[in-house]
Length: 349
Ligand code: MRU
Image (cartoon, rainbow, N blue to C red; front, top):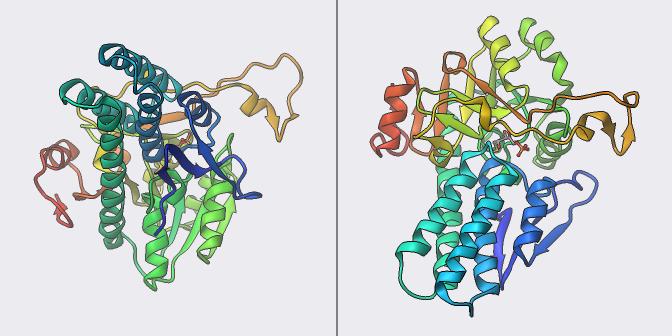
C-alpha cells in the first residue's frame, strides 16, 4: 500500500484532492504557507492526513529557518502551530500532531529542524501502523453480502495509507466478502461523489451513489444493513464529530434499527474536552451558493455552512480503533483503550 502523503527531500508530496475524480495530480509543497493553503482549500482533507500534513508543515518551517537562533525558531514554530490549528478547528488529529511536535521541540535538545522532522516522520509511521490495524479490526463487523452505507470520505485519500471507515470496506472486498456500498454525495464539497466514488471504482467495489437527502428512503426501506463512517473528533463519552450530515444519518439509523459504526484511530479521541459546538468549523457560504463556480441561489441569499456535526453516543453501536472494537458503555471502553489496555484485536465490552 503506498502512502497518500510523504516527505521527500525537503518537500511534502501528496495528491490534490480538489481535482479528483477528473485529474490525479501529485503536488509538492515546499513551504508552510503552501501547506496552510492546501489544507484551507481542502487539497488535503480528512482528519488523519491533515494531522500528518501539519506535522510536516512544521518540519518545512523549521528546515527553512534552520540557521536562526533556537529561541526565535521555537517561537516561530509556535506561531506556525497556531496558524495551522486555525485552518480546521474541529479535527482532533491536527491539533494533537501540532502539540506533539511542539512539545518535542521544547523538550529535546539538539538541532530543532532535525527534531521536528523526526517527530513528524514518527507521527506518519504511527498513523500507517494504526490504520492498518484498525482496518484489520473492522473486518469483524462486515459480513459477506452486506450492503453498507457510508458518508463523506474515509478512505486512503483521507489518511496516510489505509483509510478508516472506507478502508475497512475496501479490505473486506479484497478479502473476498461480496459487499456493496451506498455512498452519499456529501454536500456541499461532494467528498462522497468525487472521492469515495473514485476510491470504490478504482478498487472494483460495487456501489451506488445517492444524494444526502435519500438516506431516510434507503434506511426506512431496509436497503442498507449497516452504516460505517469515519470521525474527526471523538469524546470520552463516545459522541462523535464528523462530516455534516452524519447526525442525520445516525438518527435515522437508530430509528430504523440499522447499526451505526464509526472508525477512527486513537489519535482522533479527545481525552480533555466535552462535546462542544463551539469548535465546529464554519466554511465559506460560496460552497453552498455555487456549484462548479456557477451561482445557484439568488443574489443576497445568506447561508449557514457548518462543516461538521456531533452525533451523541447513544446513536453509536461501536467504534473501531487500532486497539479494538469499542462498544457501549463508551466511557468505560474508551477509557480502557486510551489508557492502553485492551490492545490489538480485543473486543472491548
Ligand atoms: O471536511 P473534510 O473532508 O476534511 O471532512 C472529513 C470527514 O469528515 C471524514 O469523515 C473524517 O475526517 C474521517 S477521515 C478518515
